[in-house]
Image 1 (cartoon, helix red, strand yellow):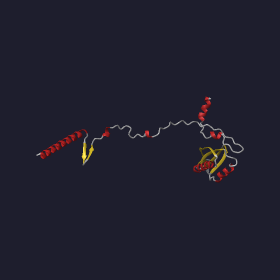
Image 2 (cartoon, one colour; image 1 turned 180 degrees about the vertical axis):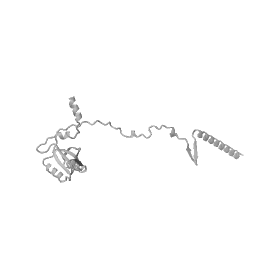
Image 3 (tube, one colour; image 1 turned 120 degrees about the vertical axis):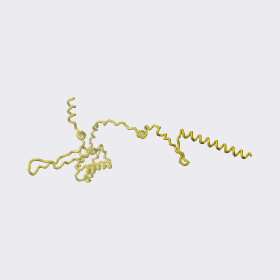
Image 4 (cartoon, helix red, strand yellow; image 1 turned 135 degrees about the vertical axis):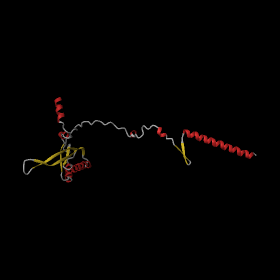
Length: 212
């Protein structure tokens, strides 16, 4: 008799447990609707739709802060170094030609050569390109027409403290490696060479003269 009562008591507990589980599932489904796939529970609620989306996709905070650009100051002329009995002062290596590639490469070669020979390079810059028209006269008539336009490119390598004993060797190396179609000249740097680098403004200069 006792074993039968124990079995009935166990069945009753199982029924109560199943009812409690079913009630819990119904209550849970109301607040959190889910669907089952096999033994996996898949939630149909998408929380991310209600979350704020501002700031997504912004990456500027990852980049370093940009430093405000400073206005370019007007370049001032440096003091021209005078020569002595043992070394030259400030010299300009002037490279000109119609082929920009040859002119640029030869100027770079001269700059690298100065670095190898421990010759101080003060500055290296390009001058404005000059254009010249080649005019031809017609065989029958007096009118002239433009046959070609030649562009002259110029590069300057400014050096100083070139010793008098090294100068002949340095110039000979430059001349032996000078490409065809490129002109080479070396002259002393003057104040006019500094001002010729910048574009002139006649109108502005005229207004400044009127103010003065």
